[in-house]
Amino acid sequence: MEEKIYDIAVVDDEIEILQIIEKFLKRKNKYRVTTFTNPKIALDSCIKTKYDLILLDIMMPEMDGIEFLEKIKKEIPKQKVCMMTAYSTLDKVLKSHKQGAENYIMKPFPSLETLNEKINTLLKN
Image (cartoon, rainbow, N blue to C red; front, side, top):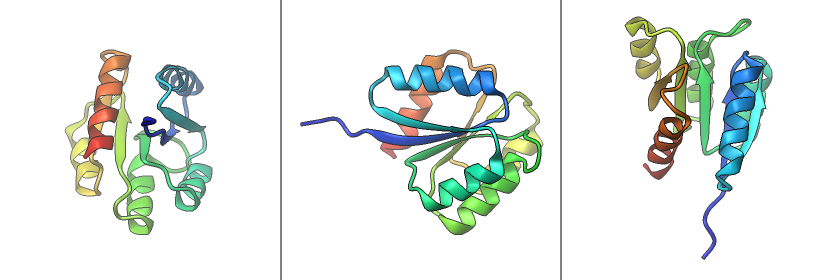
């Protein structure tokens, strides 16, 4: 039996972060990864395309991750979202949880395997 391939969208204005995540996840051979640096374009795509998970940065220009989260959950209430942030402000984490984020991870990541474990946990629930 073939293992399911999961579709993941990664939204972050830092190109280096996107490249690291994309390269790492593609090596796992169980993810199709689509990256976005522009949250408005990402939101349109995420509404039109069914992603199994969205990895979403909180701090971005044009539209922050909290606003993105609010909009995507309004359109697709069951969409799984994991917030990523370099800012450990409890306020942002609580606000994203209140808006429906399933989890969050700090940047820089403790390790890419930690990111992979969070992704696996979210996809299995």
